Image (cartoon, rainbow, N blue to C red):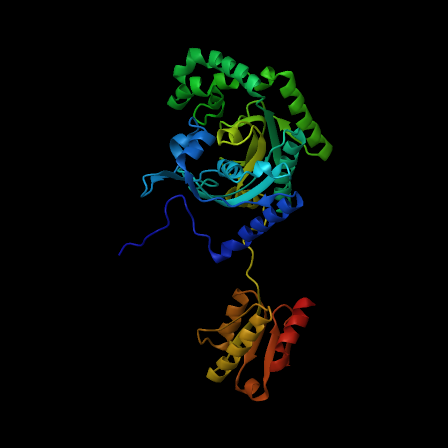
Length: 423
């Protein structure tokens, strides 16, 4: 019978993998608490229309990458490919705009799904951590969101980080830039890929983000959005940069940074990491206007980012940081014989009730093999019970760190372990 394997573009996270994943989740939670962002959890599937309207019908995500299906009620549903649209939908549906505490500051962490060609740092199911601050037009909150993302990476030990920022301007600025891009690309649009040809009239800004034609001379010489910013957009971008300067955060302005989603305007940013292959972008985000209104809410703007845990791990490995993590156990019971097994079972249960992590041998191994098993599990102490120890109601305790070996009375085992572990 053929073995059923994990679907392409997905991976199993085994117990040996979970140390770094738990650490990333805990770090995200701690940083968001410091910045006063509350957790939100949205469904893993939503109405397909949510992403068509929210992400944009001209994007690769909507056109090529979504997992869409029809349910038994003949409704079109899609596994969420990104986190912003569901969060904004929830913001509108639950009338969070009526909360007296504004802006509404939210974070999420969970699986996303995109049908892409699997490669390092890009899976069809990936875990995304992101934040959204909705309801404020203050450029200082743009800087806050950027600083939050950087703080997350720094707490994990990453040092090779580069922040790249740009401004897409307001609606008026984008309109003038759009017209300039159409004039620029139209004479030679036949030289570009089919996707770019389709984007010319619908969303020419996305041609700058094309992965196929990125080296085309016309992309290199395309009109810069920074040359089309009106005074208000220039002032907004200046305020964001000034706030980053005040925080001591270094950055690089890149006029070609456009991001791939239709709802961005004003601030866009990416955080790059150590070179770990073809993809070095760790995080991307920006400000959006019109998205809340598109879903039936008031005319308010937001700012947010999304990052994948998978790329964090690649960046950590590239910088030589520890990601495996060893499993640790407080005490391993090594019984010899059936009577000893009964006593060990009772003491094992007592340890766990007292908050001491413990395990025991269930494979009837010899003593030497049991010590090897305890070492593999990272046990701090090994408690040996044989006929002699049972007769005297003691355990032979070995400290695996120091090599010290002492006898401890059965009814003192909890106090002994707690004293040693706390010390």
